[in-house]
Structure formats: structure tokens, C-alpha cells
Length: 177
Image (cartoon, rainbow, N blue to C red; front, side):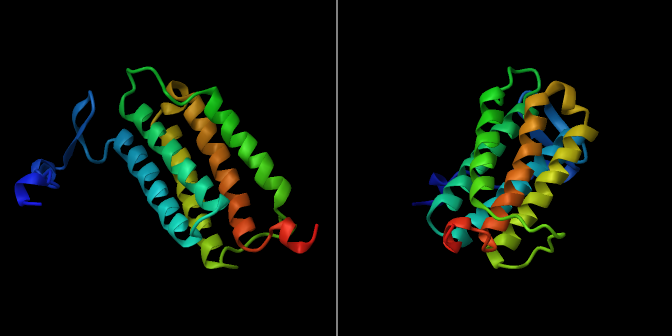
């Protein structure tokens, strides 16, 4: 594959501190919407790192589905004048997954200090970045424009807390229950 077959990675147009956003033209890189998108992108990247550590199986599948959901939330934030794609069915999906994983996972009664396992710690880091994305959504004023996205982000962090505890060995099924 020659150089001309590869799409460009850098245009150099962002060297002035701006970036292009779908339907919004050029925005400063410190624009609240760009911050939200950056936080969600970081969360997705961390979920990818955790997924790579998880190997194959249910947890890896869950993390991949959450990455895909985060990308859809990014689409809603990037295109505020378009119809939102994240809706009630997404909230139901996350809530159902939370209930299922909670049923199978032992949650310690004491305060949890991340780091019982490498995988659990990676999921916890992703969870904390999802929480930051939630705060960014609120700070940027998107809670009203994207109420379902805000709810989905909030429940996703809860789900990741449970998934991290599961990864740390809180699997009820493995303990003979």
C-alpha cells in the first residue's frame, strides 16, 4: 500500500488552536463541547485498554458495547442540531446490564480502593473518566439538550464500578454460589 493510498492523519489546520466539528465549523480546542468529546474519547480508549486486558468473554463484550455506546453519545454531542441517537432503549440496555452484572458480582461493604487486579484497576480508571465526562456534559450545558446521554453516562459509570469489582474477583459464580 503506497503513501497515496493512506488517508492523511494530520492536516496542520489545528495548529492555530482550533478544530473542525461536524456541522459546527471551526471551534477552539478549549470549547466546552470539545472538552466533553475529549473526555468521552478518553473513556472509550481506556475501555479499549481494559478490553485488551480482558481477552475474550462476557466482560470484553460488555466493554466493547459500552465503547460503541460512547461513540454514539459523541455523535449526539458533536451534532447538537440533529436528532439524538441515544435514547430510552440505550438507558434500558445499560440499566439491564447493571442489574445482570450486579446480580453476579459481590460488592464489598467497605470503601473500595482500586487495584485488586490489573483488569479491575483499568476498568476503574475508565469509570473515573466516564464520571469526568458526565461532569463535562453538565458543565457544558448539555444536560438539557442530551438528557438521555447524561443518564446513560451516569449509569455507565455505575455499571463500570460493578464490572471492576467483578474483574477483581467478586464473581459470585466462581465462589460456589
